[in-house]
Image 1: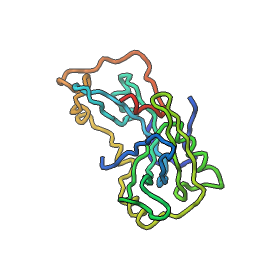
Image 2: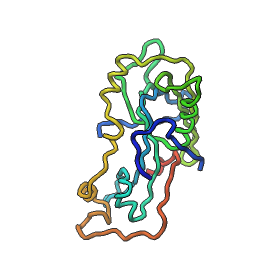
Image 3: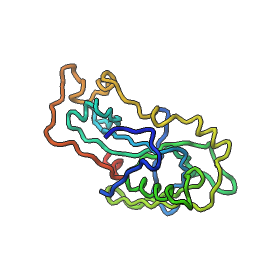
Image 4: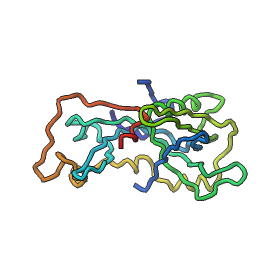
Length: 215
């Protein structure tokens, strides 16, 4: 699966089965209020452990990916730049700095957002807010996405924050062979001659929304 940073909403295909901050969705009835401010990107991620047991997040390099060559699991994700409106209200605006964050999700959430974007009554997601509600944990986590009906244009302050935010392509850097070696992942550069044994099982893909709970 290749990474794609030039998608439109029509390109989003879902099925049921460095200087950037990621948005952490919290549980609770109040939900997580956001404003989508960019097109979605499709990103494949490898989660690998180094020699000390620390988890390393590595963007898949596609056809040149050494991890794919050796059958390592790849997680299929979607990313969107969003305004974090958790500390915003309709009367006073933002209580702190305006923050543009990366919302990284699987099919469960992206499918619901897309349903509004493709609805003529809603359309461009830069014009209205979403509230994402999270319930449960682990593989039992459920997400519901509701679009707020009151539309509004982005403020000049919000536009400035967006223009200063790094692009998703900049954030999702493809690591070189030397950079991978420096991560100290067993079998991928540790000790110089430590070459990974090629796995025989087929690599698996996951587009579930519970991937973070494993780490």
